[in-house]
Length: 234
Length: 234
DNA sequence: AAATACCAACTTCCATACAAGTTGACAAGC
DNA sequence: GCTTGTCAACTTGTATGGAAGTTGGTATTT
Image (cartoon, rainbow over all chains, first blue to last red):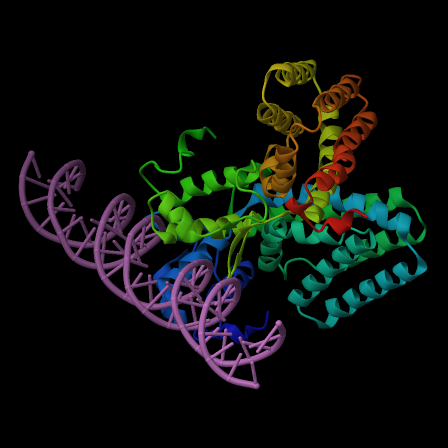
């Protein structure tokens, strides 16, 4: 989203809850509101000049996405990033996207391969001259494209909530790891698809999605108080 | 859940929203509240002798699970079951549980195989003398057991919301299809695990989870107004 | 008869007041 | 010093009134 609504004061006319939901979700996922931080209904009510009720209902939605946790009579807190949630999301994505890439390879036409080549090339350009957030957007678009080419356009939507903790990790560690490695892996996947080798394409995809298993321990070690369930790593 | 709280009148002391959330979710998933049915805040507020606010907040949670849809100033309605959601959930489960069964086969000890044999046997017993709901519970427990044996205990929890539409389908069609076929497939999966044949076990699992692709068109045809997005089937 | 204007009865949305429980500071007593 | 009791200031939870918008029936007008 643009930061037109992040001046902490004005909301557009119309329903308040959907707007606030998007704003606060973005602020949490990008790390503007940090894991463990205490928030409160009155705090945002004053900041955005609205009543407690819409803020409260926004908190309920954020809680369903595991972005905040509401402790009755005690307070509401930005959740720390759950390591098991990240690992589980990764495992699910590996299984699902392996199947997607197998189907996409079977369906691959020269036209599809060309579009994927263009996508990878744009990633290279953005990695050099763009922001980490822009590269992240392109990365997600690439995986969504593969799903579309496999005829599984909906999969991305239904796994959206699952990917939230993964995105949080990437946002707080955007500058710690270079995108070059990821781009090279994307290119390898496309190459195997070009050769109509579904098994090899699947293996490249699985290896690609296993990367975070290697990075995660370092990220956790660098920001231990942003995470919970860290004992799962050992 | 027990039906101790389904007398439409009394709730236990304590927080109201969590109780009402469980009650209404159960009533929708089991088909007591039917797809497309109109509901309203005041309706349940009167029925349970509470104010509109807790009902409203419950609706928000149900909406996040795609069990109701809130149309501002127009009303709240029990969602019709989304055919694309069912098909996508099935696809995701096939990919994930195939991987799970592969890992579980690699890890399979005689002790694990014995536990799975017992589970299948209990399914046979319940299929004969139990209720469809009880069998459904055992079926879910079986798949959860496999995830545990693969060291992926969390997967079931994180895919819970995804499975909701699938469970709705099974509840409205519980008597239309016999469980014998499913039990036989469970047995085949365990047999391949016993033989330490991960590839065959995976294939049996995939075939098992593809069953709903065959049943779904008939269920939709028998209850067309319980579904939406039915054109996806053609 | 048919189209239109009106309006009463509904709905969800938001604001506000109060209820109920938690927490931490601070003073009293051991 | 250390424990304990008190209580004020917070938190979220619930109730209720009114605002804003939709809907469908009913007169009114053409």
